[in-house]
Image (cartoon, rainbow, N blue to C red; front, top):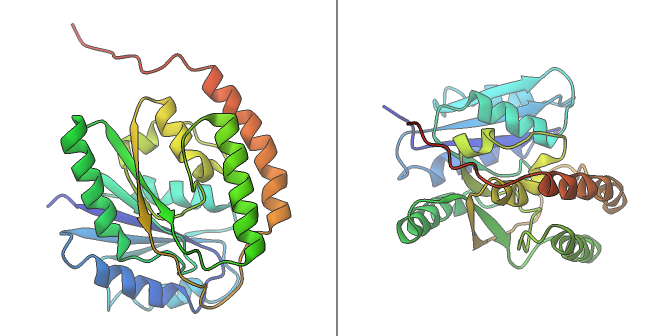
Length: 244
């Protein structure tokens, strides 16, 4: 039977968060239909992989992939999508701050938008409300989102939100590069796909620490934004190909 959904979760040194999150995802998807949950361990050096593999008897739809070395969040997401068997992909961050209960809501919103728009919406992204981050991280995100929107005109209010649903085929049509996950909205629109948004919850991190710093994100974002602006300028829009 075709899968209704493949959920892809990138993790790096998330022992203590990974197992509770996997159980939450499984519980949240009980009414979704046939699905799989794919955790991609991006070269963790702690017990993340062992924690997840120990759950496979409890959660039979759980799959665990592992990079032999750390390759970054975007590569981990791509590895999961390439291995996925579902036509629709759900993603969320591995730190537990995204609420898995929002996944069915995002799926329903994608269905609603496609019913009303004729089937062009390939992604629905979450927009975090009442964020449980530090004031400095919230401020850095606000400034970064505003600058990115000014540069790319993608209309995204929260491009850093990890929870979203998207069509696997549409995702695989996008150009890939490191840090791609931060620009999925702009890339989808570049290819002519519709994108929707939905307010979602946000929670404090459980165990472990964040893998990012405000300064580190700023350094890579400037270069990435310039590259994205070039990609958009070098695209002529959807081809509209038909077979005669």
